[in-house]
Length: 161
Image 1: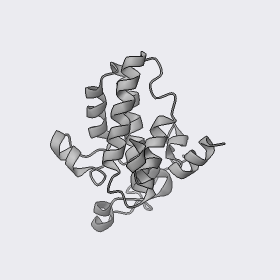
Image 2: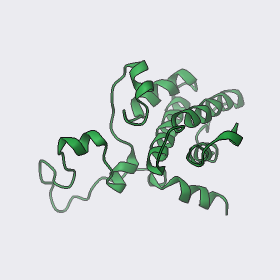
Image 3: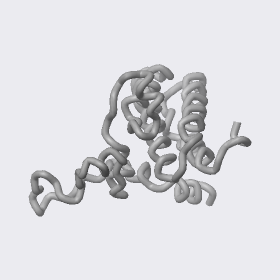
Image 4: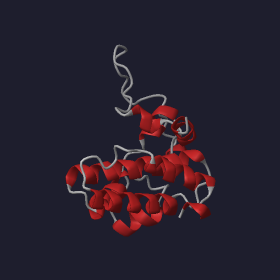
C-alpha cells in the first residue's frame, strides 16, 4: 500500500503504524482491523494535503479516534464516529459533511504552534488576546500528551534511530 503514497501521506501513515500503544488491550484481530482502517483513512485524508501541518492534524485525529475505539469496544464504526468528531472541517470536509456531525475543536498541534484555520483568520478572531484576561499565575493549557503535537517529520526521525 505504501509504494504509491506522497511524502505527506507516508508521514501520516508511519505515525500511525509506529505508535505501538494505539491498540493496547485489544486482541490481534481487532487491532489489525483498526490499524488497517487507520492507515487507509490516513492515506485517503492526506492525499491532497499541501503542508505538513495538515497531515499532522489528520494523523493526530486518526490516532485519537483509534484510542477512543480501543478504550470503548474496538470497533471501526466507533473509530469512524470519533474521527468525525475530531477532524477539523478544513482537513476533511467530505467526511464531516457525510457524517453530519459538525465541527469540533482544533487539534492539539494548533494550540502549541498557534496555527489557526482560514475561517478563524478571516473572522478577525485573535487568539493572542483572549476575551477574558486569565490570571497571571495561571499558565496556558498544554495538551496532556505533548508528543502527539510534535511534527511528524521529527517523530519519524526519532523512530529511525
